[in-house]
Image (cartoon, rainbow, N blue to C red; front, side, top):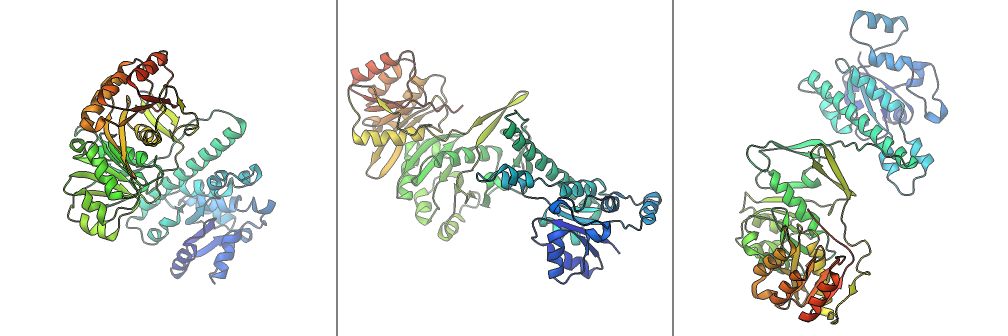
Length: 504
């Protein structure tokens, strides 16, 4: 008669699994609260303490750490090991269902004390998982309730046991890494950066057909950007880069906003209480670049939004939700990818980028460190109230644009929008000129935001020639005074924000 050992913190699916195994003639061992759950479900179970002959000790800290348990797990299906068990009247254990104390969750809570957090370091559970996983040729180890149903009737039992062993060791590795990181924080020590990423999507290729590519999720079974692809062709490598850039950009705005992205840099941004109008304004910022773009919306997409999209070809739409009407209308575009990410912007605190032989890590740029409290007017002319409002929008809009970033923006009633964006140029004055080309006549009366300071007056002079009336820029150049004098000579208002927002 096969034996299963249960010792779980998360009781999800436990009774269903045990009931199914009981119907198939299995017998059970369980510890502590797990045993009580099975007893309450009228399932026959033997307490681990009955097997070991020792009571649980130290308030439950010691339950399964006993040779009777670990010999039953580690015994191979060979005569010598079977004889060793029989000599002690012990039985082999054939299946283990274990999940660990929620250390990561408790450590992540701001109000958790050190004592509470350390108490959540699981010892016995990790030992059970490792012992069972090591002996996967005979023992099935289940570290995740999501695998319970497949465990009952796996298509290939040997392959399933091997896969579950891999999953168990991955779980204990991630668990130990979380503990190390917590203790490193307590001691102020620099700890290695350890990541667990799980292959989620095999992509056709990378940026080019000769490059192989895979999308890895930071959570097992995670969807792209933590969302769900509702329709359309499979996502590509460049789709995912553009979607991420658009999603991060659109969440810089507290009000409803739309961002159009091409090649990871926004080409149109607008905010409005009327989402359809925001879409139209964002597209109008650069309608040529909007063709084949990715569009992000910070609010649920409805039928009006789809109608405003008109016949424009776009690769992907990303939003927190799509209404039933929007889904029905968008079915007419079967190749259009719809990505639903209901959780809004990610809670990530830092970002990583690869360089040859290493990684770069930085905290995410979530906006000005001190809001706009440090904005300082440095020109003779003060900005009007409308110019200040428009500059606040332009300043947010330029932050996700590739450096050197220049954004021209204006407003009409409650609608705020870009009219020209210059991005990714080796010098700032070229970005000003490109933004002006995109804006055309709309540049006259617009405001300008620059992600970095103007190193020379030429950028300000070029903006004045376009008809720009006010500028927001970080300041900090050795030639700030010359730049300010150029603004005064042109009758512009200028604020120094005191914060830079490069996006390389």
